[in-house]
Length: 434
Image 1 (cartoon, rainbow, N blue to C red):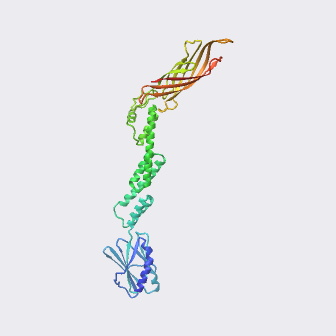
Image 2 (cartoon, rainbow, N blue to C red):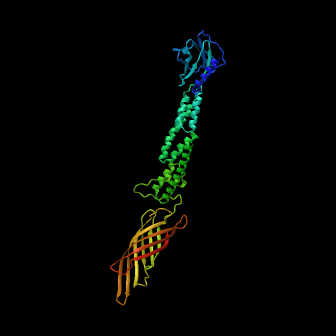
């Protein structure tokens, strides 16, 4: 009995690392069957599930064969008769192989004559271990490692016949493809597509916090782009920049943005402009501010307090204006008159900056008749008068048909062969636009 306990302790020491393998060996002490053996033989019985195909070899017994094999319930019993008449047999190690399991298991056999030992060979739950490992890796978003673990579970001999593992692997393949497409879209700033990809990834794996954060980030970025597209599309529309407005409208439409119904109605019914033909201005479905391009202002300057300026100040096009000023007609001995024609243009096409610049050229005439102690000055004197100025429109209300116009003009006069016309002249105007 002492020798058996020593053998048991040796077996435990050797088999501890084995238990962590796929095949597990346990010695059965409760069985007391006696194998029919000769005087110099020992009997060893290996009990294993009939699902396991086992092969055996011994380090001191070449050409090892079991004496007999029988089926018992769902198990198979392999019985071996080992000779014990030599001292070297005390170093006997039985090695057990299973084709479906990569690792092998060894049993040290310290056998004496007429002894019988029984061992039970079982398998750790191969499928369960690899499957649960795959699920853990999947929840931690290690998709490649999770796929490898699930493949091992799929190859286990005790794997069920259902498609659960196969479907999980297909999900992982889908996630890997979606991650690649999502990353490409994100790097190309296509936040709409990236948002859709990351949303699907998160739906497939609720533990993928990275996909969820990217989904939120892309959604926020896409909403910002939508707001930008629609703001600029509307601004361009208000300024009659139809082509630019249409491009941004299409971008907003492609990104699934929430578009103003009026713009949808406008662009869905708008016909393409034909080359060389001016399209009739469509109805204004969103209450655009009217241009009120025609401007008439009363002009005042120190030397010529009576004047009028008439012009056209359009939002997009360069237009023309005309100005005429004169002094008091009752004072013909010191009568000044001024005429100018020029162009107007809007430098900033924004409804919040209603400012136009003016640039023109004019003529200034001075009829002068004065007498001094030294001499008498009499005659008509001339000057070339370029000018520059600004005009501001202040519409009446949100949908105005008219508005207030304020004008300022600076004129520099180049006198022609005289010194009687002063060089600088300022003029201000106040009037209406309609």
